[in-house]
Image (cartoon, rainbow, N blue to C red; front, top):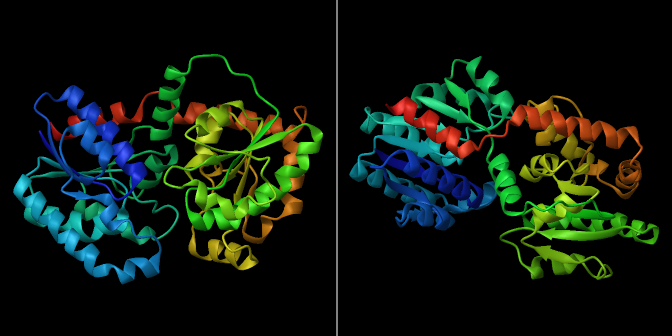
Length: 374
């Protein structure tokens, strides 16, 4: 089979590389072409037609400024699809690019090719009207969140839940680190992977976490991939006793008694390690942020843990609620091993385990994808 994949950022490059390996293990004649990154190149042995870094523009303003570049690359990928003549086209996340340049183009010009979308756009959160386009242009969707299967199926989009790449990463880490680990008197700070997230969240995290050092607790900042020491330096003055560590986020989550986590995939990763957490997302720090969230997003929660469980299992401090007083209160509650707040979170994480499953998502995705093609 001939597979063409489209990826637009680093985490999707990682997930796509796992899918490529799983497909190669089951399809001896597999050949690949893709827009993606280094990990996909390593897995496939093929250079990317376009490296995803060429379109890694964050924010509406940057996208508008670079619209000509994005359009040029979109046409370049279209030409590559035509030349490669794939049996299946696999868009991975990266919704705006794929909806504009890949899906309609493929259906029009290669009607015999299957289009199987892996990691579907989060239409359950916002811009749900785009599901009409997905129904028109894709043959099947592979979901990575348990509730997505019911959501999309009820809207007449054929989908399959295949598990989550976070589970793959969790199982892989356990396999390579089988030793027993005990919880330390440690608070791990996970302030996000973007510079704006550091600016908005890390100062408050550091200020409050430091208060607990006099009570025998320590704190460590988990450095994000793609960021450097220099990105954290402006916020660490006066907090030199709180170290910054790169490349060991899972190890820190596994050992910590509590995590302060900026919303995102990290909240689900933390839950899989059964580490109690406070979810922080200051993002400018005003009540306007909360009002805008309620107006533009059609979900009650913004952390993956609460979205999956459909209840407030972990506290979410959004906008102006992310302040010293509220953060301190939650930390005090969660550091108490006998508190109901801590017990309730641990019970919630056990539910997350059941819902997510323990099979690797890449293998499940490859098996489902091959069954759909054949």
